[in-house]
Length: 226
Image 1: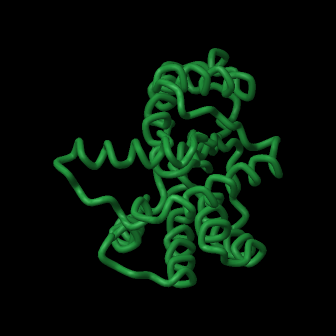
Image 2: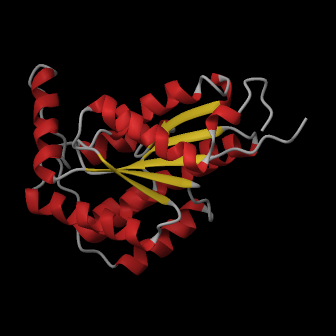
Image 3: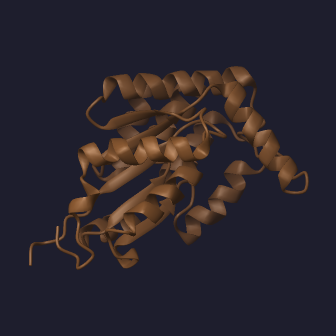
């Protein structure tokens, strides 16, 4: 039987872009062709016990965290995430679907916060040990659409407070979005930009169609051969 070759697919986008929702759609679709035991769903910040604890700190709306401290917190838990979750899963030939990864740090802490991009890229390389996504899906929408969804989501959950990033000014989210689009332009072989302002089901269909051009999922067999 051929050796299983795992794929590492990341989902990126501003707040309210629908990353988590579309990741779930892809996971459901992929499970038709790959056993669920061969798919790993993870996220950043988070993914490990340490990551989950630091996530609460990073998103706490009552805390002020300096941009540099924020950057190092993200990189610290990414190191743990890669070593404990991502590398072992890929070594087993699993498909790893990750809600945000190193591109998010370039977009948020680089373009959003204004920290040096080259420095962040160097830190990312150290934190990831050279692990890079095979494919990155950028769910793109305007900050008006994304923040509108974030507010709606908060209200639907009993009026919960927006998290620390969701509370940032619209100009911050605009810079983050432009940063993501620049990253996609610089890495056309890895990024797929998807119009995420549309209806959820239409976005999901478009996403799956585009992924099929890279990885014909219908050719995969549930028996586990690649």
